[in-house]
Image (cartoon, rainbow over all chains, first blue to last red; front, top):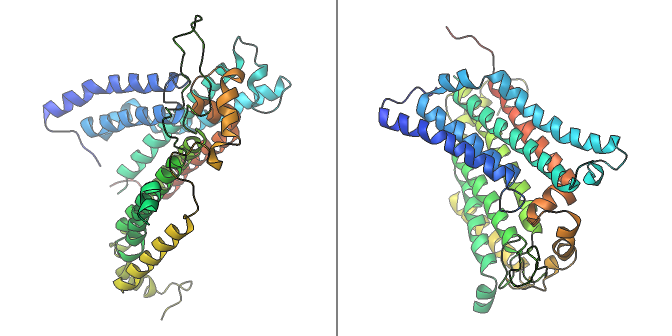
Length: 138
Length: 139
Length: 92
């Protein structure tokens, strides 16, 4: 059970840093195409921003902002989005997960962007969920 | 012998790391130390397979833009200029599987500690053997 | 007992080094790992997909089925930790 930090300097600095870490994690996911990065790396950075918030402000504050129901739903939503992109390609006439048939300008690139976002969501929610379960066990 | 060690220094270094993890997994009696040894073992294998794809004088596997040509998006595409990307891809999967395994192992260790009160292997074996569970063969 | 484990570790390490005596030297561009399919990924990866990062192109386009299995693995790990640790016991 992690309670709130007593030192106000540590608490304020950690809470100031968290939005910048989340912005950087989103940047790493979105720029997986042309620089090192991608779904797994950005998802772990996003998850670790929530872990830093837990260390600074206590587990009750994070549970107030990001409920357990939302965590479990997000874990499954990422896997369903990934498989759903494959099923959309199947319904449009090509093989499963064959992105060449999507009706956008550069179909393979847009399909890959959707895949990376789905993987990032699942990895973030899984890491925060495992951390929360390990903390609140008595 | 020495030129084997110099030409294949990645084999020697990662076999040493792997054997450190192997010794921690077998010889230590605390369960957390065994888990750390398993983690060291898995990371040494990951780094070894990534080092198998290295090429002399090559750069990271992201396609370079050629600034000398007239058009702005001319790309340089020689196979000897880029590091082999296939071990990197396979080891991304291996890293994530390692994280998942460590998470589940830590959860199991929490339950074992709550039920038996200890995390030493010999005390645990004594407690399980004398617990009158019909599924456990007692001495 | 510790000397038995030390001996086992030493024997396993020597066997591993003995098994890798025939491997190509580090940094060799003609090694068998770098020739067959990875040169195809490097030379034709940018023309077929539109993505400069070769690792993301292989992970999300050529081998996207393995990445689907990978995502299922981390989802299963989160569910397994939930099943082991959430007992639903009320406090107090």
